[in-house]
Image (cartoon, rainbow, N blue to C red; front, side, top):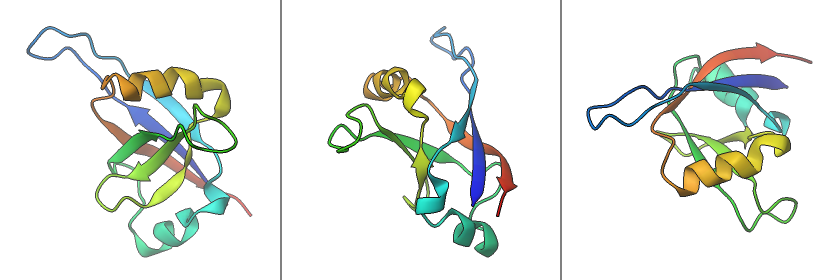
Length: 107
């Protein structure tokens, strides 16, 4: 099992829009190829990720998937207790950039 923490970085841009940083732990990594991606070197701190709202998810209409930006490889999901907030941010185009900030392996 791989535990991922992601960092979403937002700062004040040229248009004067406020940007904020957040850190979340990705859930469900054991169901995807996170460990394989880690072994291959495709998953490491600093790797750009993309958040995708998945309203048709049968378990949670607010589900937000976490994927590697360059390949689209699925890593897991934003925790359920934060999903509604992040779904709204994603749908409004408010998440400008996101990246893996740390990785911890577990058996």
